[in-house]
Structure formats: C-alpha cells, structure tokens
Image (cartoon, rainbow, N blue to C red; front, side, top):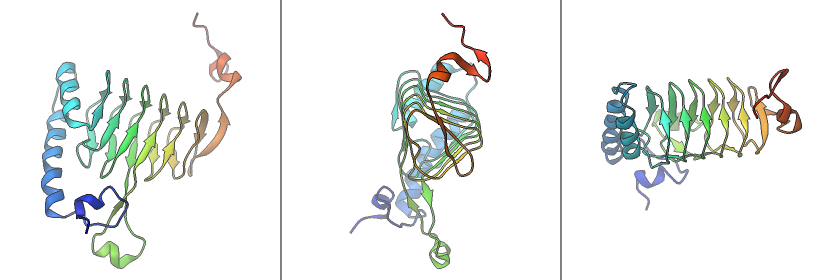
Length: 202
C-alpha cells in the first residue's frame, strides 16, 4: 500500500497534511525563506542556494526573489540558463520540468496540484498532483498560469496573462484564456522582432 508521500507523485488522491509530508515540506520552505532574504548583490550566494534547493539546477539559472514554491523548489527541475522574473510561484507538490534557456516573466504561476470536484472529498482535504513540462527555449509571458499536467513544447511563446489548461505544441505563439495557438513561429519572425520593427542584428 502506497504512503501519502508516495501518492504525491502518482496522481492519486492523498492528504497533503500527512505528518511525514509536512515535516519534510517545512525543511524546504525554510530554505526558500532564507533565499528570499538575500540581497540582489549576493549573486554567488543565490546560485549556491538554488543548487541546494532545486531538484535540478543547470548552469546559469537565475531566479529573482521573491520566489514562492510549495515545496521550496525541491520538486523543480530547471535546465541551464533558465531565467525567472519576480514572483514566480511554483506549486511544486510534484515535479515541474523547465528546459534550457527558457525565460519566465513576472508573476507567473506553475501549478501541479488539484482538488476533487466532489465537495465531500475537498472537505476531507484531499489533493492530487500532475507534473508540468515546459520545453527548451520557451518564453512564458508575465502573469501566465500553467495548470496541472500541462506540457508546453520547445521554442513556444505563451502570451502574458494566458491560462494554459491543455498541452501547447512546439514552435508556436499561444495566448488567451483558455490559452490556444495563435500562429506558428516562422519566416515573419526571421524579419520582425516586434510589430513592424525589423531585426537589425548582424
């Protein structure tokens, strides 16, 4: 029979207030609290702390403080050169995977946790978790919300304020509530970087 802690990562209903879970969670939340007390100038200290806090932390990862996470980032897997702006919230009750070179705007929420629709189970405080996968070289715009179980493909842009409830493929621009594909990334983007502004980098 699976323990409550094991059920955190299977998608099964479980009780997050389980004593074993809460005891471990407090350790990681304390580390996150300490991270959020650091000064912006303490870049080396922050980098060292992230290596300790996160499940995986690639080279060049930078997360602006304050950073919020249910498990202190302990279930977050960040590839190299991931950048997250202020107020990233990771509801990391199970695993969150973010690929190399992905950029995350301010006030983004990435959630893995959900609760049953049936009221009596919510009353008993049951929860379930589904992992989130965000690909390589994505851009997640400010205020976006990524819902449990979602996968975002490589190179994709998620527009600011979007609520991503379903998988989004690679190499597209997607936006809205619910988030949907607006167009593919292609020849137009080889010429223009913003509206009618032409790319002039040699």
